[in-house]
Length: 271
Ligand code: PAF
Image 1 (cartoon, helix red, strand yellow):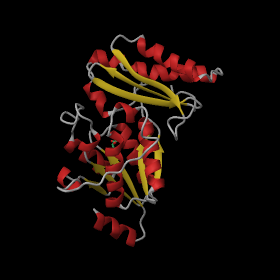
Image 2 (image 1 turned 120 degrees about the vertical axis):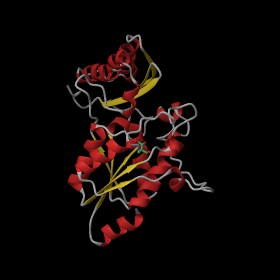
Image 3 (image 1 turned 60 degrees about the vertical axis):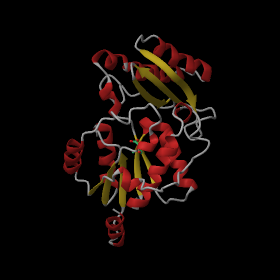
Image 4 (image 1 turned 135 degrees about the vertical axis):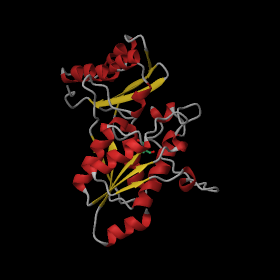
């Protein structure tokens, strides 16, 4: 991968990277489309990164659709698909991890200890392997975006982080590979995440600025859904994740599936 990327740079081409864990859906493909518009060459990495799953999480059953992924990427016209094995990525003896402090500590970081260490480590390695000029991430994983921006800036990685809007189903559910785990009743219940964010955005639009009140609105909607169990509902600054701001985030368990979603309350809620 590095040799190919060096060749592209030597020929004067810019390189866009879309890091994924496969099981591609329209959300991923929107990142790929934007990368194709903005770069001469586009690499999509497909790697289910074991070190970002915490103990007891879904690593073993994480959805995988390798043939379908490849045909989607071929049809989209990407220039390379980078699919390292776990042994390629973490050879015996590898002992260096990247830890991002501060922004990685709260919310997802607190709920999933070690998760962002795994993300930051693999993303740094993917940036190195692909020599990417730009890398594309979905707003759906807002805290991951903040962590990766911090990583790229703090380590002077020279990669521009491009953030693409969340792609949603018609009823508002944010696309996620983990939606595949939901049974029909859970799928219906899962709409409570986007409904909660929409109601909080409406309240913000009417002038509500009290974070406690906004959090209560989020919580009330989730609590009203019998199949949903709230993990957290927060309103924070999108860059620091602990100072006050307008980014509303929810994490909810629907049955055995944990879903996250977010919306910047300053923006009108889509739909
Ligand atoms: O968002 C994801 O799919 C993963 O966290 C990423 C960025 C590909 C790193 O493994």
